[in-house]
Length: 76
Image (cartoon, rainbow, N blue to C red; front, top):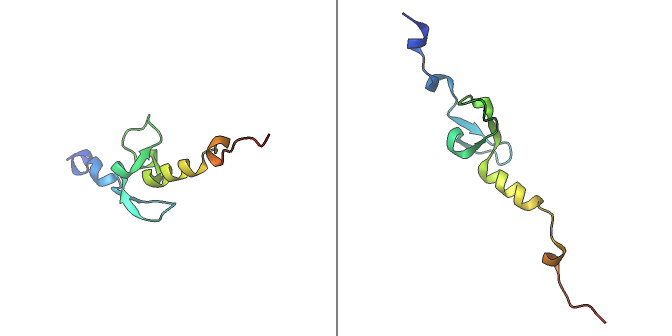
């Protein structure tokens, strides 16, 4: 009997991970970005921040354009 026959990748791969930002437990494969593409399905190759929190962080940290803040005609 081979030890490889007794275990599969599903037993070794964590299915859920807790997000560091929001603290919710979510599905690893669908709710977290793959940060290291050279490793296929290893749980350490996925980020620790969920997709929702990542997109919220990126949107909030964007540099504001001076025209977006408040545009007025010059006072000549």
